[in-house]
Length: 270
Image (cartoon, rainbow, N blue to C red):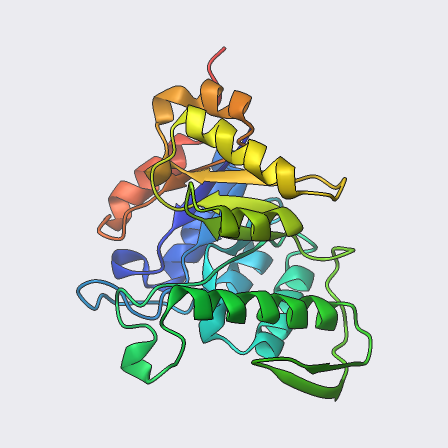
């Protein structure tokens, strides 16, 4: 099991230099990963930073941390722009990027307050799936044409390609026991559950993923601490969890967060 931080770019952590400072200290303290929320709005209208600009600064300020957005609601993004962003980030980071994706939510008006369509889950899921198809096509650096239900590309090529091959790892959000998001995750490289998951449920979730997974490549199960029990790390590891992400609440003050970061990852009990 590896250990990462799940960090909101909101409130006291909306200052991008603070996010960079945290990342540097996380690397020094022995954390393995540093993943930033991707919200344009949140409860109470807090200050917010752009996660992609912050991740670029973090990429060139660290050497070892796995980094990325966690989770980017792809249905409110243009996939060709995200393909450029993820490629650039992966090259800045020397191949340390993970791309976390989900359908997003309109709980804070991140769609409707900007007159964005597809605020129903099934519609956003269709946008997510087609958006991933577009992005992974562009990552290959080959000239491509795509005429889908939601997106169109005509004779497009994007170079350079990401450093990681055959692609940047894609981790998909899922809500247990909803099977459809798990089927999506099984097609890619990892799953990130939203909502509480017990060790028994984590094992059942991974069994469901294996039922639908055909690739022989590694698959990650990243569990935010907000979804699990920190006293059961060994049980989660046995269930198939490969990443434990310490979730920082959006209400946390900078000093409190620095204390968590500097304390280092918990580690598995011996």
